[in-house]
Amino acid sequence: MSHVFPRHCHATLPTAVGGEGCFLIDSDGKRYFDGSGGAAVSCLGHSNIRVREAVKAQVDQLAFAHTGFFTSDPAERLADLLISQAPGDLDRVYFVSGGSEAVESAIKLARQYHVERGQPQRRHLIARRQSYHGNTIGALSAGGNAWRRQQFGPLLVEMSHIAPCYDYAERRDDETPETYGQRVANELEAEILRLGEDSVMAFIAEPVVGATLGAVPAVPGYFRRVREICDRYGVLLILDEVMCGMGRTGHLFACDADGVAPDILCIAKGLGAGYQPIGAMLCSAGIYDSIAQGTGFFQHGHTYVGHPVAAAAGLAVLQEILEQDLIAQVRQRGDHARAALQARFGQHAHIGDIRGRGLFLGVELVADRASKQSFDPAFGLAGRLKKAAFAEGLVCYPMPGTRDGRNGDHVLLAPPFIASEAELDLMVDRLGRAVDGVIGAL
Ligand code: PMP
Image (cartoon, rainbow, N blue to C red; front, top):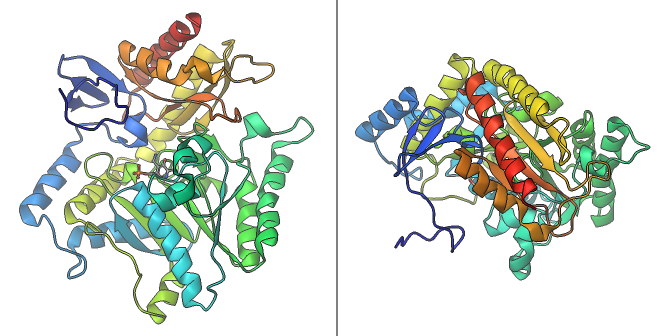
């Protein structure tokens, strides 16, 4: 019997024993194509030599030095490289161990920034419905996914949630993508005014929504309008690129495609590519300076902040992405994968939408294409798909629609950047068989 506390208590999971390129191997020798990189983590596949060597060398040289006492060479070098690539005037990096910690840090930094500047009344955080920003209480509070929040209600921090930018499901027939984007962005202004012009500390959103909607980018102009509104009311813009950052969308940072730069940016997953747990929060010089010139220190911290081995992994990952020009490869392979999905599912009676950017792709399953009606949640479609795909030798990331029926079942695909065209074809083929098998049995 396994004594590891699994996510689903009744699940009997295979034991992963190896990883080769884009494949995971279990103790029976079965090979699974990693079509979701776990959850958009394994961007370099499972056997990258450079990252493995960097981790080993760093353990041999220096495993740990607490950042209360020391900085370290890999942390400094990774921060420099990130900043050299980062949008806008982001110029400080705070390292953490994952995405939730990055978001928690961002929320606390936003709050401390306003307090330091003599605006303690700025305490409200605005996010979007059907969003996910992590599982710790602060990050979970920010998230607007009803299902993930429901059991923790009394503990969650008071938050406002405005509409997501979900073109496929929520744009009205009389709107263009642009007018729709302006309408939903303007909800931010309305909410700021409702709460009080100078009482909002930050707005947080994912440039391309991952886990909760399934690779949904905002429509053109949406984030530019959001940026304008934030600037007008002194609200900080926090972009959560924990899933969509680090090259996944065909830009190193997803917001580059939207032509906006945030005040605070959160990254994780692809930064360590699964070789080490690492996340980061980047912030602008203005925010950093306010704190440096105020109390002088960020009132936050975790034991493993700036862990040298994690930083060494992150540095090797970023060097690999940049030096191998993997961003260009993501765009080209992303086009290929999307075309393959279109060929396989474009006419499928139960696939309503195929979307995404780069190698961050989603397909939405619907009971009826014309009405975009979701499947009855009682079918448990996502769970069945995950199982069927597994049987086919495919790891993908199906997610159920939320209980309010607003977002449908979808499958998120986030294969490694190194996947060949043939491997991406295999992914689509296996997914097709899983989808047809499950839907045929309903
Ligand atoms: N933000 C987003 C957008 C995420 O997708 C996730 C994880 N799925 C998180 C935050 C939390 O990251 P972690 O699981 O590493 O804490």
